Each structure stands twice: as structure tokens, then as C-alpha cells.
Length: 173
Image (cartoon, rainbow, N blue to C red; front, side, top):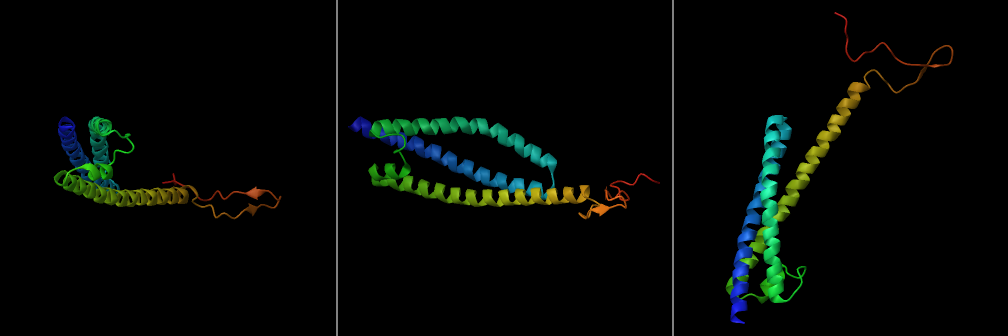
């Protein structure tokens, strides 16, 4: 039993290190969302390209981190005799001694706060991009529908007549 308690303690420490890395990743994601909005508003294509490259480079590293966290979680679940789905921070808090429980509880509260902020910032970014797309669509529609009033004209033969006296580009000098 003593070896199991030490093993659980070590795995909890490893999990806390992983969760700390997760909180740094969420903070970095918040920063990237702010950068994304700034670059979109400023129409900085170069900045957007650099941001995309950094996100792609980071995604592979974070994927390995996620696998490590899931591995630690699985080892804790096996040690405690529960399923992976049941191995949550709340369940872990319930069985830990007071000192570890406080650290896990603090990390859980930190992650919850960061995730709520990330959801809010994600929604703000999605709304900005949606409005940009809507504005671009309206702009393109107004450019390509230039001169078209939506009214149908008929000539003396009863055929529809298209307005041809307006042009998108005037080629006359």
C-alpha cells in the first residue's frame, strides 16, 4: 500500500506539471487570438502568415504533450482502479491528502478560469471574422451588381432589356 501511495503521489506531481503546461498553452492561445484580431483589423497579411506558421509549429509539440497527459491520467486510473472517464480532477481531489488536494484544487480553478476566458475570446474572434466575411460579401455584391437596380425593363417588343450604359471599369481615356 505504501508503494501505491508513493506512486500516486508521483503521478499527481507529474499531472500537475502537465496541467501547468496546459495553462501556459491556454494563455498562449489567448494571446494568439488577440494577435489574430489585431492582424485582421490592420489587414496585416504578413503578420497573419507568421502567426499561422507559429501555430502550425506549436501544434505538433502540443500534441505530444496531450498524449503524455493522457498517459499519466491512464496510469492514475489503473492505480486507483477506475476507468479513464472517471479519472477527473474532481475525483482525484476526493482521494488526495490535504496538501495535494489544495494544489489540485487550485490548478482546477485556474484552468476553469482560463478556459472560460478562452471561450469568451474565441467567441469574440469568431464574431469579428463573421462580420468581416459579411462586410466583404456586401462589398463584392455591391461592386458586381453595380448599375443593376433589380427592376426589370421591357423594350417595345416585350422582351426584357438589360441596362448596358453602366460599366464596372471605364476603358475610355
